[in-house]
Structures are given as C-alpha cells and as structure tokens.
Image 1: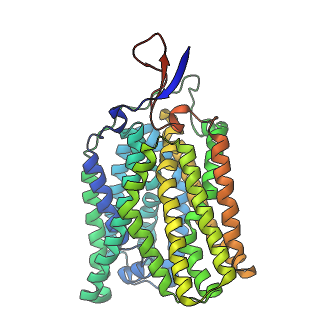
Image 2: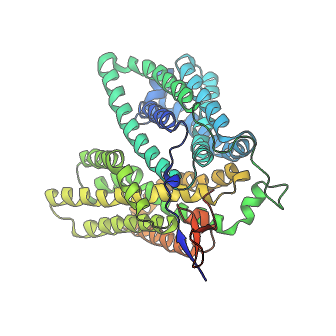
Image 3: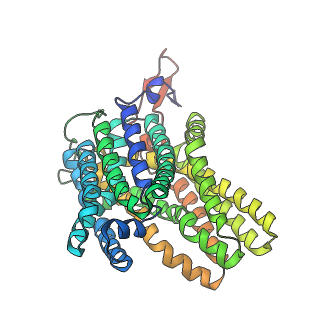
Length: 436
C-alpha cells in the first residue's frame, strides 16, 4: 500500500543561480518605469514637443500593435530561450528611451514608440517565461512574490525620483528622465544577463507533438480554462486604477486626494509585506489553485465592501476609514493571488512551448485592461454599485473555476512542492513527480 505526501526538501527553495542580479535588475528597471508611467501622455508630450492629441493617438495605435506582437514574442521565447529574448527587449527599451528626446517629428516619434511598445507589451510574457526557465518548484512562487514586491517598490521610487527632477529642472527634466530610463533598462539588462537557466539549450520537443505551437495551446482546454479564470480576476486588478477614482468622485462625492492615499497604501503594502505574505502561503503547503482562489475571494470581499459603502454613504471620516480598510483587503487579495497564479500558469505550460502558453495567458491581463475603462464607465453610468457587483461575481466565478480546474491541471503545476509516494515496506520515499 502506498500513500502520497508532499516533499518538503530544501531543494524546492534552492536559490536560483544569479537570483540577486535578476531581482536587482527587475528593481532597477521598475524605477525606470515609475519615472514615466505616472505621467504617460505628459511625459512624451514634453520629451518630443508634439501635441497631446498626437501623442495620445500614437500611443493608442502602438499599444494595440504591441498586443498583436505578443504571440510572436511567445514564439521567439520557445525558439531562442527566455533569457536571450529578455536581454533583447531590455536593449530595445533602452535604445527607445535614449532616442525619444530626438524624436520631435511625428514619423520619428511613431517609429520609436512602435518599437518600444512592442518590447514593453511583450516584456511580461518574457519575464514570466524567464522565471520558468531559471527556477523550479517553490522557487518560482518565491520569485513571483519578490518580483511583484520589487516592481511596486521600484515604481514608487521612480515616481518620487522624477518628482524631484521636475522640481529642480521643471518640465525640461523630462528629457533627463528619458535618458535615466534608458540607463536603467541598460543596467537591468546587464544584471539579468548574469542569471543562468536551469536547463541550457533549446527546449525539447513534446512527445507526439512534432509541430507543437499555438495549436497545442488551443487544444489544451484546462490551460484555456485557467486563462479564462484569470481574465475574470484580471478585471479586478484594473479596478484600483480605473474604477476607484471615478467611483470616489461621481458616486461617493469624496475628495480626489483619497485616490492618492489608496494607491499609497496599496504600493506600500505590496512592497513591504508582499514577500512575507507569499512566504506564509507557500509554507502552509496550500495548492496553488487554492491560494489563487483565496486571493480571488478576498477581491470579491473588497468589492462587496464597496457596494455596502456605496449604499450606506456614511460621513467623510467613516468613508475614509472604510475605504482604506477595503483597500487593505483588496491588496491582501492581490498579494495572495499574484504569486500563486503566476507560478501556476508558468508550471502548467509545457517547457517546449512555454513562451506560446504564457503569451496566451498574458492576453487575459491585456484584454481585461483594454476592456475595463469602457465596461466600468458604462456600468457606473447606470449605478455606482453595479461595476463592483459585476467584479464581485467575476471574482467568485474565478475562484470556483480554479477549484474545478485543479484536478485537470498537471500535478506539478498545482503543487509547489513535488509529490512523493510513501511505501510501508520502504525506508525512504519514492518520488512520483517532481516540479518542472
């Protein structure tokens, strides 16, 4: 008679070769991102001298082109390896920001923006693939959590840094910021170049699937279900930046300053306790599907809280306290869901076509982000509580879908630690599966 148990050897938490360089590079590049994302249209308007209308149009068109490029990025990862493609994208982003101050004509700006947008939109796919390439087992969950914490901390630091630059040099400081971005991406690329993949060489072919490609992804119903479930959760990720400010001003009639306070609480918690929360979840031995489902349930609780708040509409002080409490619950959902959900998608993807799988998965975030503004504003025009109700139902649906998918996904994806079989007659456990 044999029983299954979870292997908890220290190897599951082994350090990745070059991990410090990888994380430092991610942190530095996040500082660069934080130096321009908060200003976006204004940033490129002052750097290039073009009108806001032209800049907005170019950014929209190039952003859509970047979405269309993501499947090609997934193919490139499978053919050349995530590390190589990652370094190429860092190089393109560095070159793009170095050239922005010289792109004062529409054709020049459009060309630079297009190339840079292709790299920016594809970067999430490639970075996720890189984590799968350099880490195994629970180390993937740890890197997911560390990456998210560093990204939040870096973007916050970048926003503060550019604020100081603008205070010293005025709008002319945007040019220095562009070159600072170029330097940050170049340095990040040099650091990430030091990380080593667990398995060198090209990805091996999948047995029985000599022409493995996007057709393989489309035939994988459990993974497509996982992607659909993540789309429902991804709508919730868009709530804080898109719906929250509109809800405050139009339905609660609260001061706009609360939006800044909410973002500050979210960023500080993500950067400060993100790794701690993910570590507690990982050490609890929870399955990745159930951890991700718990994160979705916390999202749903926060959205229901907004419905209650929007119904009661208490005084200003009570509203402030309630909003900050809701943001804390929302952030906890983010911190629980993100590492487990990310590691789940990476580990559910076959190694030979991991890039294509993750490009498909990443589309769930991109489509949710593209749909969120129009969906939220349309629902908000009917009733301020309606978008939160839709988000709550979506989050509950995502949690249910994750639990139902658990038995259909590969065991090495569901479990952060490998499973072993324990035989009564044997002194030592016999491994059954190992983390990919």
